[in-house]
Amino acid sequence: MQFGDRLKELREEKELKQAELASLFNISPSTIGMYEQNRRTPDFALLNSIADYFGVSVDYLLGRTDIRNYEENTIAAHTDDRTQQLSEEGRKKLDDFIDYLIFEEMKNKND
Image (cartoon, rainbow, N blue to C red; front, side):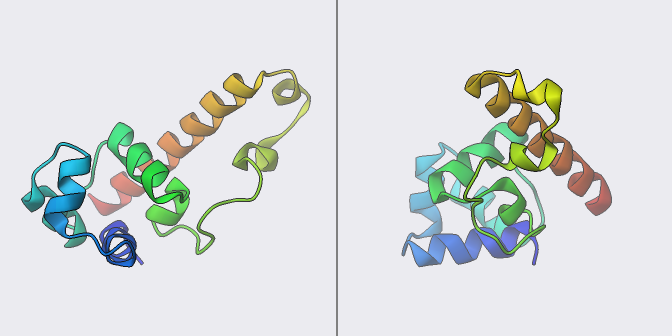
């Protein structure tokens, strides 16, 4: 399943119209339509915002997993002695960076 398919599925679950979802993120309804048709992808910041709004992981949005949201911070999968020393904010930043790298990889595969 691709990003657009997941976005449409999540939008419909919340019974939102494309225009309503677009309004939440200050983008045009046609942009939402293009996302749902897999003709465009959002930038990383918007992708994170969409994931946060729907309460799902970026991996789920990108179709990399069928797990909507991990019970624990996904950083647990990448833990070693160095990451144990990070604050909660530092772990969140690292997790966001990992999501960004995954997003870029997926974007490059689709180009």
